[in-house]
Amino acid sequence: MSSSERPVHTRVNHATSSDYGPGAGKGGEVLGIAVPELKRRLQQLASGECSAEEVSTWALEIMESDSPELDDEAVWTALDQLSGADLLMSPDTPLHGKKQFEEWLEEFVRKSSPS
Image (cartoon, helix red, strand yellow):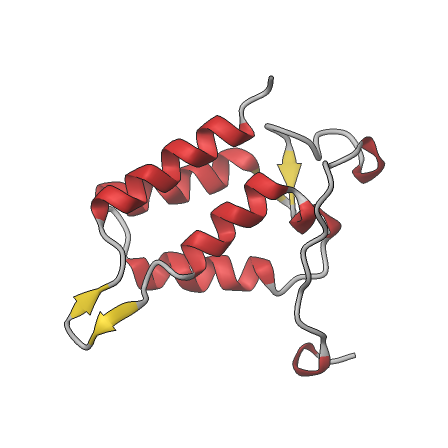
């Protein structure tokens, strides 16, 4: 099935299980990237080290995969937020800004930290 024929991703509300393999849970390896990579992207966005457009493009590419790790709530939420980081309220007014990017980072750190 081509990527254009794939159904829209529907989130399943359940906790990540060990069925995904070692490290698939909190703080582990996700989608071939480590959870710290998501944190790094959020930090770069909040600090202005990278553009909202760059982070949005990266997040959308990850979200388009078929990986079962997308069901991890903390990962999906962070990717969803990053994918919309470049949205505009008007042609010259971003919908999200530095304060909100910092809040996303804090939320992700809280949700993805081992209990």
